Length: 115
Image (cartoon, rainbow, N blue to C red):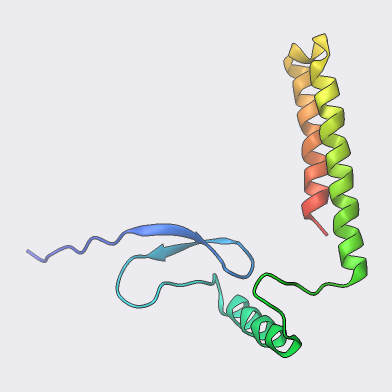
């Protein structure tokens, strides 16, 4: 009877894009990236940061990108405030009203994470 090898598979986030991927336990270095393209982007970013003299916790983005992120976060923050006000109303106990508030909040969150 052949021996069976037990392999533990865990989920890990890609170091570049954050996408979850399966990592099998075993010998060798653990995977850090979900695909080769992410590994390459990380390599390029690290070398460019080194050229610019940036630390590990520093990031370079354009003003347009920064303003876009700030705008989307502002909209999301105001939406959360609106949802809090709506949920404080007595009719918020109804499932239909809860669903409306949740849909409103999820729409704003989706816009925030989708460039």
